[in-house]
Length: 314
Length: 263
Image (cartoon, rainbow over all chains, first blue to last red; front, side, top):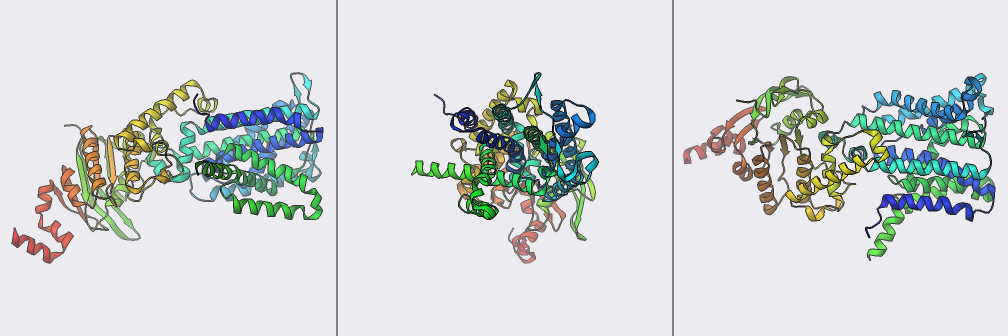
């Protein structure tokens, strides 16, 4: 029997977790937390393509997330769009914005993308926050119910399966991309841009493509979150959320799709579990992140993988 | 007679007011090993950087098989059949040896985004073909047994050959090798020697920058000598060796006089 590839193992493990969790989780509250994890993980898996594979940092990724979230709130309200169609519009809009912003920036080497996306994220948040007439401002806005195949989606269990399926699909696409000429090109330019260029890779274009893809992932995750919560505030697009997304990818393990999911799970579940610490909740969370980074520098998944591998070899 | 595989005409470039290269011209034909030598700081690597599209010359033209490719970006040159290696290794250290070589196949691969995302059978077929070709090239440079090792785990001499394999994966008609034997021991140097001869034999024009004079004299068909950014001499290994100005540039005026008196 041929050995299971890391790629197939990741997909099988995710599928198993997806099927097993509803049997293990005692209440619909837990299912809702799990759905939140899948949704955040979807954004993190996309961001991991940009950060983990290509080594480019986006500090404004919540901006794209916010565009997706508000598309499903504003599209139906102002344009009479079906929520599903509005999500597609949001995805295309976020991808288009990424293309527009990324094109001039990604020709440059270095930390320009991080700074430019930081500005972009703030800009999106500012618009969502201050265009009260249009977006409802800081108080947020209602989101209509998702209608799938003529059925109105309600209940924790439906949302669990929708968000889980979206994540599984997102991971599948991401792993496919990794094992393709573009995936190899991205990993190559991460290590040496000059060698990648000489090998025939259009570095600026490759970076632009993956930036646009990462933005699309974030927008879709944003739409799902807004539809799931039936409500959205500008917080989804704020700087803190951008940093959260980056942290998920780094804590879980740069370059590992399963790492991005683990990172998303930790940063989504931990705050719920840490409420016992009351006002020290944030401090404990920060401390845990520091400890993870000190003891598993490559991130949780690659770090544990190499630990067990070393133990098995010894 | 057909156009040379690679030709440079009257190249000039300056850095901060200092002329690094001035009036450099050369041409190498398919199947030829053309070496560029000169003391440190003569401008050899700078010339490579211009020919491979990393620097833009102030004056002069580069022709690839007769086509003017001056100031083309490196990835377009690679698509047209020009590849290079680097003096200070540029390896993709987070990838395995074979993945490094697979990246070299980039210009020959179908790179459609949608087929890649959906993992269509055509993409899988292509991945298999790319891997098979990369395996052949690793075998050619003597690294077949290290294919799945992380590149970071390979010793220096192996990395030098890995870079050559990666460059060959693009099936270049012109290959620029920047000090392929630097830091290699005698056995490794002999291996590089054999590789260069084999590559040229397949009809590739090999342009070589190298400090190991024994290697240069053995493998080169013709040699260009640079000194202080200018052309000092050009000719066969025997001609260059006998040129008193070349000896002077390398060993100093006095030694040149001695060498002349001795001959």
